[in-house]
Amino acid sequence: MTDTASTTATDFYARFRDQLAKAIVGQDGAIRLCAIALVAQGHVLLEGVPGTGKTLLAKSIARALTLDYARVQFTPDLMPADILGTSVYDLSTRTFALRRGPIFTNVLLADEINRAPAKVQSALLEAMEERGVTLEGQQLP
Image (cartoon, rainbow, N blue to C red; front, top):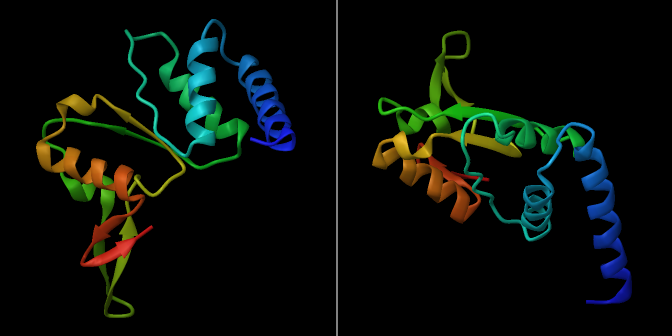
């Protein structure tokens, strides 16, 4: 890593940490790991008991970086189309139009993933691994 890249990463982290510190207290480790995941273009699994700021952290990251945010509450009756989206028939144009689901966002808070059926978990994992989804036979970013 060059000195310039190192300085840029250090500056990013300092600004990122300072911005999140306005809303979140006592989660320095989680903030650091989230910053690493952002730079590495990875994903983050936040675990903890209710009330520890997981949702606030996800919302604050999206707000600090002016990114789109969505939240999905995973339940046993959730279907893949609920997170991916589906084609909807438009009467005026007599065509099907893609209605994108909440997975098409920058920051997605997937709450209670363990409660989701296997097909929904598979759709989520495909999106995470491939950085896109297959919907109606189309590969979408």
